[in-house]
Image (cartoon, rainbow, N blue to C red; front, side):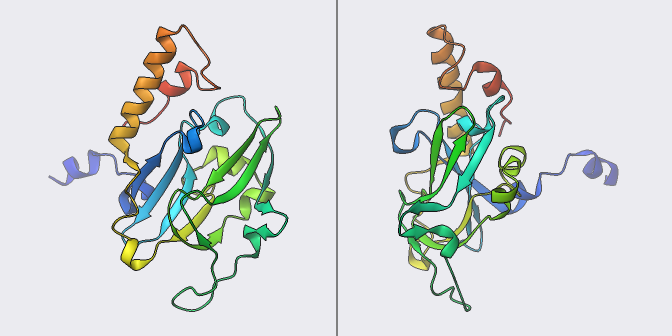
Length: 197
């Protein structure tokens, strides 16, 4: 009996403690998908979904900036106390950061949920490769805490991992039908590398 339990692969830490939710084609931009990792304590970690163009092979990150506008930098976010007072309040379409790739493409990463910004990942500023190598762990974008009364409803407008895989499969079929091997940087080889649910 112990051998049977030991032979089953253990789920990754992220999959054990977090529920994965996805927002596809954010702001109508094809394949610009975001992943929200929701912990049972309401905290949400904003990351890039596996299909995001920044994570596709051959893409290199030149710069990541949390400076959203002339007057707004996510790096200036300061929270304090048990109730996390002082954090910037975010709407679903609030920009968190901008990623500039060496090929000149720029991507804006959005919150996708309403809540208070607890922290941004400053490690990816010094080491942008973390974002591509470990997007669900050390390469996360930000941590957001939804309001208590909204914590049950924040997943409205998001899809679960099973539906996300269906979206990816549909994209792949459409690309194959069109004979397009590179759908905005997301060709069928990249889609085949996505982990199954």
